[in-house]
Image (cartoon, rainbow, N blue to C red; front, side, top):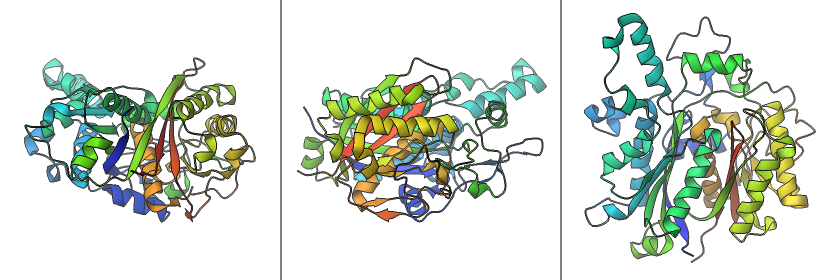
Length: 412
């Protein structure tokens, strides 16, 4: 079986532009959750979000190209450019057919749909943009990345709600192991922080209403948590077969062991009792990657700050890892950046990768009064130096979709 390694990462998140801006902010305990500035929240109960500030598409792509993309696809192209540069990898005529793209999303171009529905109401049918369909289509993040860099290998997109980002890594590993590509640009992108989305999630009671101060709103695993903060962004990694990476002298950050995904078949929004489906994904990921549970040191948790979700994930970790669950260093990055939905698992996977690189568990912010039902080591408040030889990222989505991916320190 081919070994798969990570050679470069890129990110656009509420903590800033670039993977290191994300990671430095996360490790140092900064928050990217602020009052929403891109539209008027006067009539809204929820006034906060994880907006990406300072993003200028023309810094990463041609202006004309950017005009034909929704924001989620712009994020994907920008993060991919950073990841390719970090990997020292150039797409050429000689290699473009052996490169794949797997960039997943939860909602695709939500902002484009909302904008054009408004145009339809106020201007009539002729006011609707002719490119609405190819702009909002969920596959457009992968397709725009392919077009931006001239990639001719397989391109794939799965919309698996909040499990999408992790599932992208699992599918990319399979693509390389099957010999369909030597290199895969993979991750997730989301930009659904719109008035209609906020209104809907507020009515669902999924969002935190703790507007003041915004930084204290997302409180995973803490008593009194009242939901997540909706965010936007993208995270991308360059995966390569070990053989290909070594041949070109690439910088290897970590090895990707693979993973698994499962279905709860239980409820449209809530997790299965006891985290049954999540635990199955964890167990299968460990078994199929030939990893003993005791080998895992760090977990980049999903931890959305919903009451049932945090408890179900804690129970799933105990079911999959047994007593070793209490020895895991676990971090909930949504306390710092909010919930990026389809990109959330990709950002968590970056945490799992960079925790190996830097031997650190970033903090779970606002964890001042832990829920006794969530009694594992969730790295409260400040980062900790820990030994991380192997790590896990998790993503659990609406509809009962669960995805898990495993990473390990690379040893040739």
